Length: 252
Image 1 (spheres, rainbow, N blue to C red):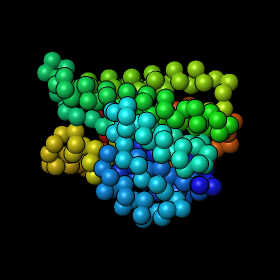
Image 2 (image 1 turned 45 degrees about the vertical axis):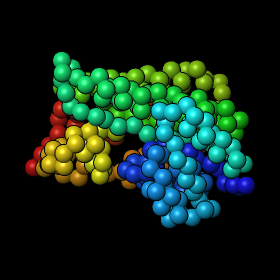
Image 3 (image 1 turned 180 degrees about the horizontal axis):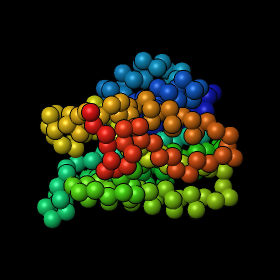
Image 4 (image 1 turned 120 degrees about the horizontal axis):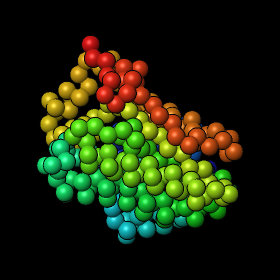
């Protein structure tokens, strides 16, 4: 039985999710690292140690997989106090007139419905803890649109609506609802998965002095989650200094 407070982090096999799992373990949580890629999760959990982390393979687009995640958390026996909804991503940069329905469907399923599934499954345990927190990693794309980003911005706008609605519906209950909205974050996979080409992915960050990295966002998540329970950070927008707005990026 786990004696520490438990934190669940989805999308924990790489990038922001993996960095967040490491940071929360350092903050004293027992981290349930959840994602599709089992080998990466097992390596992360082994690195953190069995006292600090448990790996659970989970596909947030599957009801059965999310139910299995909830069951695995329950078997740990500790108190679930933190959920970090981080699983998400982008595919393609087509204009709306040429948008791929498959890509748009995938982005909605992962970013919005995946968050819905996991939140629904774990909310009873978070509430039962008496001091729960739901942190969802959104994006500045959740409130600003841009050319070639219709599918992704639509999904992140939907996610922002989900988070805001959840906060209203949980008013009066012992669960905080926090949205972290990053701007430009350079990770190994996000732009590559979106564009499918390493040169195109590198061009996104070309000339930008110090784009944010995964550890920066993990730091923000840990900060929001470790404030006194009466302090709710509704939305934290974080960008690199070189990015003043979605369309305003200084390149050297």
